[in-house]
Image 1 (cartoon, helix red, strand yellow):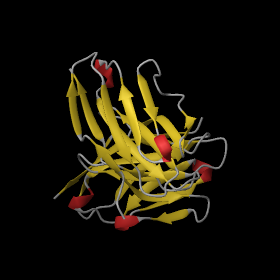
Image 2: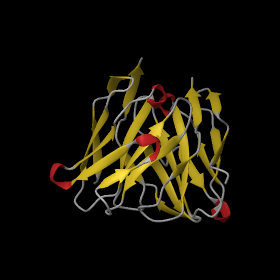
Image 3: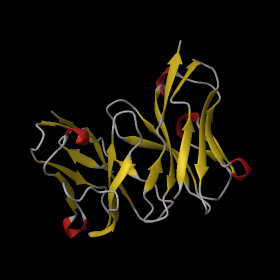
Length: 114
Length: 113
């Protein structure tokens, strides 16, 4: 079974530029998560989708971050404009459904903002 | 809000020694608790999870954890460390809304020969 796919793996941009990340979850997984992992810290939830609806985006900086999950499958996360403090690894995860279900993580996209 | 605290950002053990990584949780309701491992430049991989069934949970690679409600703890152990266990370990708890995970800050495990 294929795992969670993410691209690109690495991205370097200048501050104030825009960037987009893509995630393809495991087939059949209804729930998709985007986490931000700053160096030396644990991942922090940015947004959670259930199918193509948003369940929780309370920690998403909506003035610069946006995300969508069209057709309840793939998802994109966008940052516009980027700030230096956005340098982090962006992890996508998916799960079948429910609190006890295992979340499967992709390899992440490492973003460096100069 | 539910949260976890990992005690010790770095733990060093000798190969063959006991591994003990500490995690305490804060939750007003029975929690779901998880341990994940992260190898360099990779995503997180589930080691084990507690979902209110047996309090002693066995996971992959010889790891296990015991849920202790009286101590609000969910410590991760392995009887004998291998060099390949060197990685970052994260304890996590399901949040109140939507089942997203609240992670601890992580513990870096170093295994020395």
